[in-house]
Image (tube, rainbow, N blue to C red; front, side, top):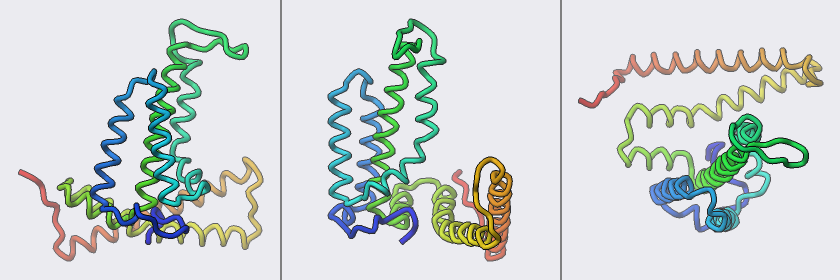
Length: 219
């Protein structure tokens, strides 16, 4: 099982549901959430209760939810800035002058993004990556897109293992991240990992071409 699936707490009934069904459910749920007016607080409370129930039934640990929710950090930062940079009438909150429109915008962005992320976590925690790729392929998504996703999942474990070996090597040489001074070394490691991953991708692509692989373009 790949790094994007599984929670270490055993399988649940949701694990046995078809990946196609879960993908359709995810898309429908996200569309409904996005289309819901931001003023409908009871609706968002209902959505949150529904997602919480799904995560509990799926036996996803809180630690796993927090780790996978880190992808939402950029949206969180932007939402926190909106009340300060938005124009229009303003109000005082804890001595700060905040835009009313910005507050509404931040609320709408934050609640909808959070619900979408939690729904996605429920999907990847109960579905093997291979099944997700096969389900996308059955929906007749572009062949190139499905191939890219399949290769990404296939080589993700390899990249994670290589990153772990680089971290172990740094530790063995006495490196300890202690603030901004260590950022240069960490950045160099990230750059090296990117270069190696890109070179590996080029080699894989050349190997595919040598075996007769050709892009299929729709007329």
